[in-house]
Length: 326
Ligand code: PBG
Image (cartoon, rainbow, N blue to C red; front, side):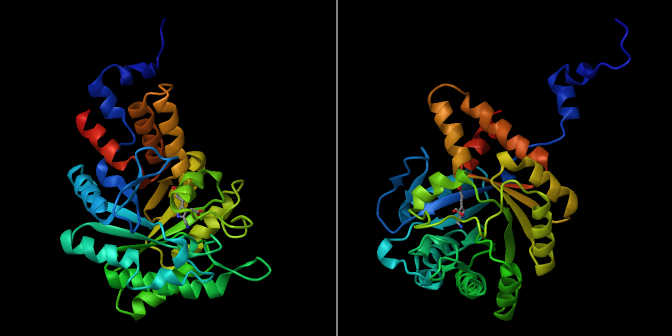
């Protein structure tokens, strides 16, 4: 057959396939999320096999291992004892709380490790919401932003490199930027959870931290999964308010949103492969229904191809090791 175009020629061997490859994966594109608690033992997280609520010692071992695997950045999530939660999430800005103490300990040992911290009240809130809940059940925006600023400052004072507000309150990026600058933290970056959807894929994460909302849902602040233009609006606001990087979350079910932000913003775009995505890949792999290494690397590559510069993934260490082997 005479065919002027034969796309298969560009796939004919490893060398030529590498010439035509449009997206790549590398460990320096990964951020590893880690769960920590005050107990002396690591506790397995049932719906996230292979992930643990780490003890202080367990965390140090994990970070050491991650550094060896080529991971340069982590993001911390605290499991807080119920006795320390209240309706205003005041534990979130306690300078002797688990997050600031952990940051200081890690920075002592690894000054070059990039530490990302989550800003939101849910782990500290007796209501399990990212913001303060009014008597009628509404989530108070501006009152919450004040607390978020105190939380962000507390994290920056402890040595956090990148502050990542995941709360989805309006105006928080600008308010946090102002608060950081006023206190001499102009070198601390903001990674905004710009397009964070009201997603059921966060289920295992909420199990891990026991942080599910006690009543209602998060739909009045997190985005409607039906929307993509709204993500662009959020991106424009976060940029104007001083965000250094933008995030889309979850990742796999929102590749079009990643692409939309990539095309409309000059800022680096991060994507969060969330707990439910991890759980799906893990569960099917454990049953032998999917080849874990192949599906994980394919999923991460798809997120890169869609336009993400950075990926937050519970698979960061494992994927880094697979990439080194191949
Ligand atoms: C809390 C927060 C959540 C996640 C990251 N930060 C949960 C939520 O919004 O309910 C989810 C991460 C994951 O599922 O892996 N603000």
